[in-house]
Length: 103
Image (cartoon, rainbow, N blue to C red; front, side, top):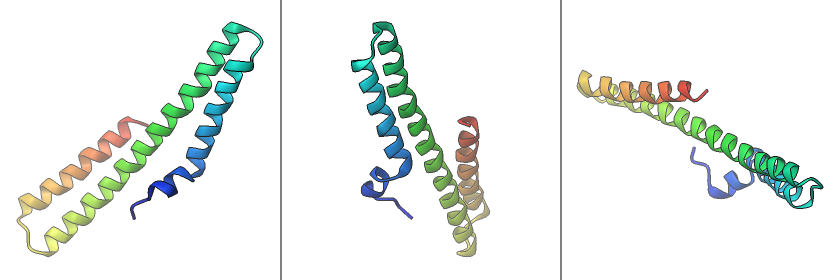
């Protein structure tokens, strides 16, 4: 099932990421010590953004693997050549290995 932009923007992960980024920006602006402002502000803005991007990438990769498996099954049932089915399955395995590497 494809998630719409509205569903992604209202997801808990995205909301927490945005709130953390806002907290980082506020800390950077209002903090008392200039060095602390810079370090905490940057960390609280950059880290959640990176984590969010990685998480979304892993979820997208898992979706691709599921689709590849379903496509391979359908191709096999429709009488596709073994080489075609094997290629589709290998594509899913490649995506899965990429997902494993990002963990």
